[in-house]
Amino acid sequence: MNKKLLFSIIPIMLLLAVTSVGAESCPEGMVKTHLETLTVQATGEVATSSVLDSGTEYLLKASGTAFAGDTIDFDAKYSITNRISGDTWTDTVSGYTSYGTDLLELKVDDEFVDWGAYDAGHIYWQNITGGGVSIPFQIYDIYYPNNTGSLTVDIYECVVERSAKITSPKEDEEVSGLVSFDAILYDDDEDDNVQWAVRKGTCAAGTNTVFGNVDGFNDDYTWTNNVFNAVADTSGWELGEYCFIFNPTEGSGEENIRLTREFVLVEQIVGQTKAGILKESGVSGKGIDTAPGLQKPFNPKSKAAERAGKKK
Image 1 (cartoon, one colour):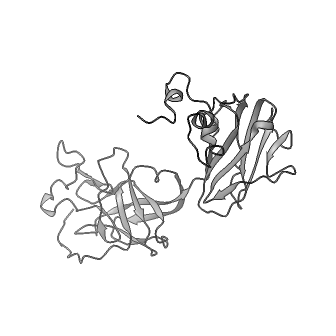
Image 2 (tube, helix red, strand yellow):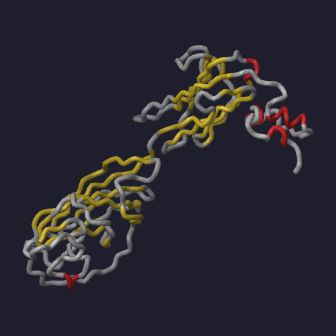
């Protein structure tokens, strides 16, 4: 590969943050969506991305191999010189080691990045944060005329995966007295509304509703930063199986989420709840009769009921 010229490189400040050697995944709670594919020629031409939004997380996938003359094949970071018997893929170009480990590497935004350990499939990932500008990609070499082929860069945008979970009651939990209904929505915005209900003996829509904001009910609840809470006094409800339905409304193009959680309403043993035992022990306070967590009995296997309200 007649490498004759050594270009001087002028450092340029990164307008994006290369956050880490990447795995094939976005940060927790996010999923990747394909944004664009770039072809980076081995002959040195710069391939430029679209504008990457400031503060947005992206994944870069560099793949493929190209040819640098003198029997040299290379990918985004490693190369092999086939004329050298026994040569293997290495971070330095065999036969040209004096040029250092950067020779024939794929640069991101005029900077060398760590593409990670060698991959036999020649696929490498990088996590980056957009800086509100487009970014260039270029293969670094000291002599381009006898190079052929190209590498491929796929850019993925990391977006919040819209999902939700019910945190209370637990599945098939036995409850009584004041019961707290809690749920969380994970979304990239905080302007969704929510429909919710508690139904006797079924999770089916419009059937046996006893509590909620649908089917003619308008019970109190809080819905702040996609966190839901409602508290019900179940002392007048019929005992048996119930279903809590949590249905945040979706925006345009978003998938519908409808979660259900079945639980069992059991008879409350007067004086045996945590609140009752605390009051019997002389503990006073406005919150004792309204705190959902105190309307349940202590674990019968523990001695907490005996010690409740007593100083050591």
